[in-house]
Length: 230
Image (tube, rainbow, N blue to C red; front, side, top):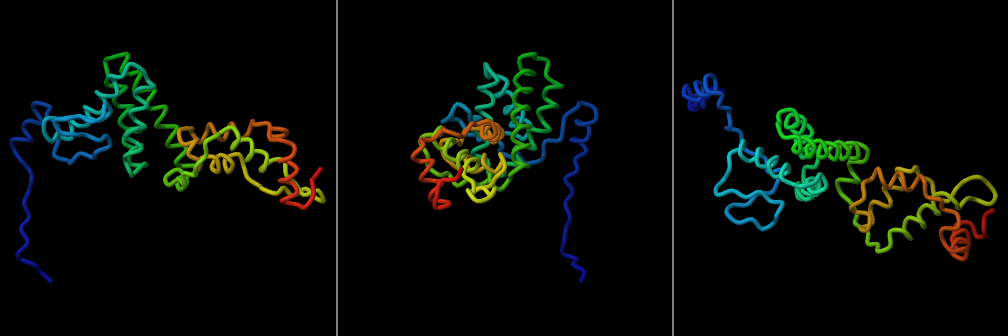
């Protein structure tokens, strides 16, 4: 059915077009996406952006990279990225923004120190993207199991995954790849700041035999099979 009451309003502006063509003024009409938390007039956290009034998208995005480049170390800049990453719900969207923006900032920056900071940030972003592509469900929503002794937790699970097998056959009590073991560990709060790739490497290299007391080894084997395996 035809609707004659609809009126289309064009946002085209001759003056804006002149500014863009002859003076290099860029189109900044798009709304900003708050990848970094920002506040007005008063800053309550050192990693937050702060503006006197609502910023334009261009000012906001430039301020993000200005904040990152002002850190004295790559570690400080990455800590800032982690802080905002934890606050931003759409993890893939956050990572994609920096995945495409950082190379452009590296290329356009005239400051050697800024380039170094941005390159370090890009390495971190790339690592996060790789991990999110590996296990997006587990990384996007974690169980946060409580645990206060990461070494004992690591030793227990490497033992369970590697050293308890059926005394009458080759079947192991618990099966899992190094990635699977790392994902189990990742659920514990004491591992929350450890990269999944690091946990995977640690799980692969941990020598589990004799890493827990012999009496506990015996009890665990008895629990699974009724007798100690060989």
